[in-house]
Image: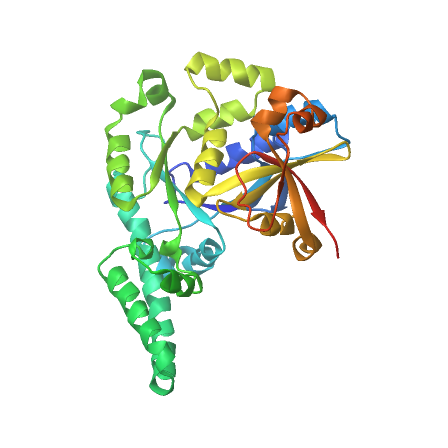
Length: 364
């Protein structure tokens, strides 16, 4: 899973990204490695995986991972190449979802590009650039499809759908808001529109807001209303606070969060929100050699889930031996779970559940 962090200059985007990467670099639970200067890989926090590791004491322990891409420089005119806009817009096309950092704090020492803090205006500025870029792409796609439709009638329905998407964009609405049939959705996925991606609005607030109550921040409420109208999520976060948390050892971190009345860090909440946003779940493989978490889409069937491990597993799939995580923990061992009849043998039509602990049987 790859998440692109976007926003206007001076909204706290880079501070958040640096906090994320520092958390990974300095915490045993969240290792980080730099793939390239603006991409960081962080492990997905999952207490279930830790519990399985305690049960099996494996040689290798492999959490699921998530990539964060710091996409800098989005300014007015980005769709026309301003501020290296074309380069950064192309980075957004490659991500699965967008973390849109919105400034919801006052600080006279950090100058806003538009002189004052206005989340609604800032969101509109960014979305307009994404929409303008998508319009240009749609016009090219429609032109190509029109030529095909002249000689092949099967493209007529596709052309009508594409024109509907273009009309939505021209009405200053995001492409993701277009209602689609299953067939239209397959076409939609081939276009890689910027505004087709789900969004989490990360409302960057002050530490004082978290102490006094985030519900008292009027700018946060403003973003919540915008997100609700677009069927997106909001996440209150303090990038500055995350930087402090990232520098702490594991025990210190838990104490610090407790003092603030928080159950988890912003990074953990961001990852969990991203999982929900993208419709993702985790299943586990567990044994002495390795305990590992695997990320799949909700609704994935057993053979396709097996294919995440290796294509041979999907190609030669025979069955999946499955036990629910909670059942396994209650019984204390796989052997006990088998005695109680809690380990099931599932076939090709089995739809995976979040927390399934699985052994795939295959033959190629």
